[in-house]
Amino acid sequence: MRICASPLKIGQSRWRDLTRLRVGEHPMPTLESLLALVDGRVPLLLEVKVEQDIWRWSPALKTALKDYRGPFGVMSFDARVPRFLKTKFPGVRRGLVVGDDLSAFKRRIALWFAQPDFLAVDRAALGKPWVERARRRMPVYSWTIRTAEQRAQGAVHADALIWEADGRP
Image 1: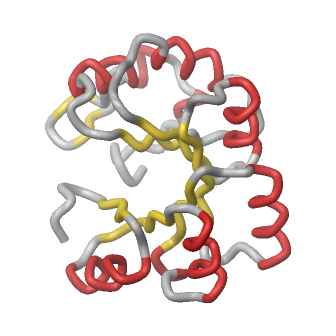
Image 2: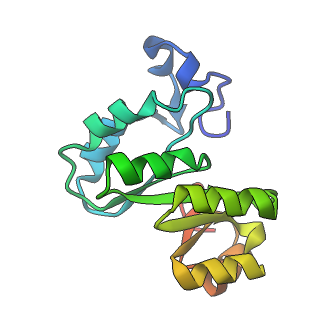
């Protein structure tokens, strides 16, 4: 809904319905078309969103990325995704996306299980002691940056910022 102004859910929709979705003035790109467009010129950060079916995304991601030569990382809110990547795709840089509302206990379990190479944390968590501790062990990215004020805060407390819209708050 946020990106395409449509209630369709990718995993529950037919391909022909998805082809009608628009991102701004353009059709929603497939991962393959996005990779062809970028062609390794800039690093990509791909977020895998899973609901009930954790295993559906893996073959599609493997097929799309097998010949891609540019730098990329894959991240997810679901700790099983980076854990799976570690065992099945060990060369892929993997991250765990962490919301500020996740309890300390669940966060510790997720970090232990995922064993990520980087964290992507909710901007509301920036400056918190757990984020600063994590940052000593691995890069911390922050999402979603929308304003100049958030950009200034993120520049102090994160290693990279994840933008929304055109990337210029």
